[in-house]
Length: 148
Image (cartoon, rainbow, N blue to C red; front, side):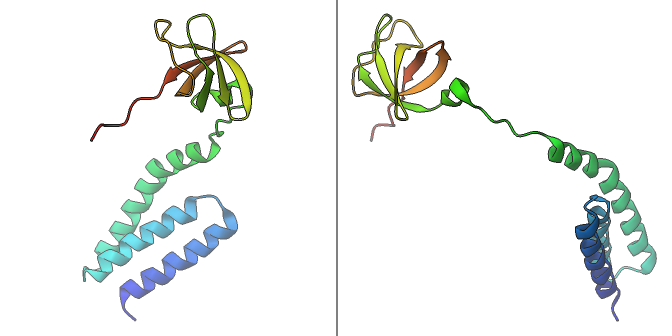
């Protein structure tokens, strides 16, 4: 049996074992076995294969595992309430100026004023919600698409 086939079998066995343990160690060692398989497929000797396996296993465990663990433990950011409205698109219902204005965000009507207080945004315009202050949405008109 060719050496690369043996390394492939080892990698698959370690991958299956990882599915049962879920520690990430065996997955990384399985990846190291794939590196050794590639070295064997190049026709290099057993010593090169074992060195490639050992070095790649150590490097993967030392450098990749902490990064993967950090990414897995990171709590996804879930915005709720008024924070979920920031970044959404809104429709101007009545002219938005420094002192007055109404917009529809989703299905709700909000009082609004422009983020840049010097702007006046006409009714019917599409705007982006930049911030929410109390019960007032701070909005900015969407950029015009490139003219043809």
